Image 1: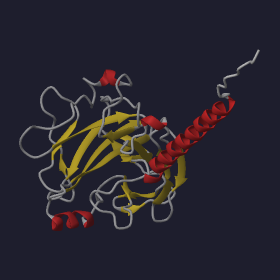
Image 2: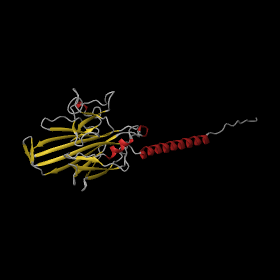
Image 3: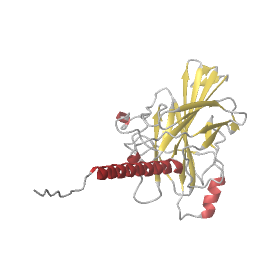
Image 4: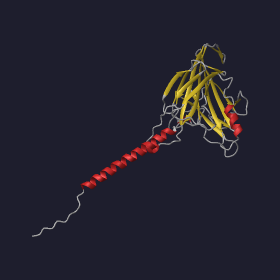
Length: 306
């Protein structure tokens, strides 16, 4: 299973592939010129520990980039700079950039088609407002994609919106721009919680982004970024040939990764918990103090008259 991440694997978790395969590109961009986005192709269904994906000699790979001002069918992503492996592109205009990595591999008489997709927004708080509005209504579907997942936007969602824990989030599964019914769709949370549903007639699958961030009170970060992974799979009885080899069926798989943050209610509840704990501690301390004061007998001088 291949998917595109905006972060490399955690240090010490699959990082041995950092200098090879399809990953291994440092984060950040150039000091001048348009922003540079760097992504990593990873393998596995664990958003935290999935290692870098490795090239397979018998697989054919196609990488397309769709930009706000480019062709709607996308353009082939140029190869990375010498000495690097990975995915990198400039973002000169405001809007959403979509990258598709399609891998085809024949196994027996079945053709496996995997499409890893990423959607990256490039917006500035001082940017052109009209351009931002156009970006929010621009098409988000690749008409010639073998399969893809589109995240359904929330009501009144803006360019800087964030998904929060507890949110109900829907995804649409499409093939060649058309909805796919009865696809197996899985949602994997940051901590590895998995839920699977079947897409409806509109290709829609909905999940609740569960709360799975439970640090100690003194370590809670309201801006903690968690990653999720959505996987869609569907099989079809399609015949054809790949690299002059015949096949009688096709197994399609699409992946889309994203991020979510703690709900404001989460850190409010942590704050309330701290307040209640402090109040309890204060009450207990006061009680102990008053109890000990009552136990202390005042000094009295006694005189004996012989």
